[in-house]
Length: 292
Image (cartoon, rainbow, N blue to C red):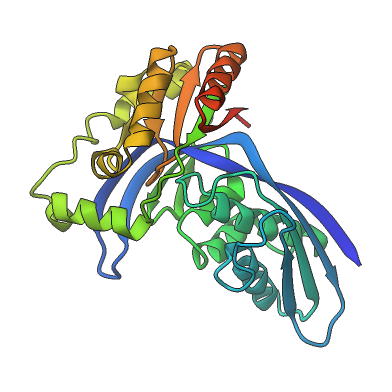
C-alpha cells in the first residue's frame, strides 16, 4: 500500500464579480482568490484491486456524504478513470474548513486528492492536466489545485497566477447561517436581469484597485468587492454583524465567495488572533490564519 498526505487550504475571495449568465446555466465570473492556512488534512492511500473503488473515512464528520456527493470521492474516481487504473483508493479526511461557507472546503479537498494521487503515481499529469480534471468536478477545483493568489475567470477554470509576496493576517468566521450557492446566484439573477448587461454591478471600477493593492501588499476595504454581499448578507444578519465587529476591531472585512463565512484582514498576526479570541468569546466560530 502506498500513502501520502496533503493539506487542503481554504481560499478567500479578495474580489468577486459575476460577468454574465452562460447558455449552460452557469455564470461567467471574475474573481481574485487567495489561499490561507486554515486547512483540512487529507491522507490518500492506494492498493491493488481488480475493480476501482474509492472509500472515504471522516472520523469526526460522519454526517458528510461518503458517495459521489463528496467532491473528494468524485476527484479520486475522475483521476483513476483518466489514468486508466483499477486500484482501490482510501481517503482519510479531517475537516476544519466550515462546510458550505464560501471557503472552497470541498473543492480544496478534491484538489488535494488529485495532487496526492498524482504524487503516488509518479506525476503522470501536469498541473494544467490536474486542473482540467478538476474542472469536471467543480468550478473552484482548478484554482485549488494550484492555490496561492490568482485571477480566475470563466466558470473559474481560467486561471492567471498573480505573483506577489503579500502576506495577510486573517480571521475567518462562520455565522452558522446558510444560503446555498444556487440560491445566491438565483437572487443575483433577479437583481441584475440575469446579467444581460443592463444593470452594472459596480465591480468593474474596483478591479484595478485590488490588483494595485496586491502589488503594494496592503489592502483597504475600498479595494475589495464581492457582488454576493448584496443578496446574501440581508439573509444572514449574523454574518453582517460579524463583519461590523471585525471592522470595529480594526480589520478590513468582507464576505468570502457566496458566503456566508466572512474574513477580516489585520495588520499583525497578534491583532488577528485577538480578533479571533473576541469572536470566540461572543459565541462565533472563528479561526486565525495567514497567507500560504
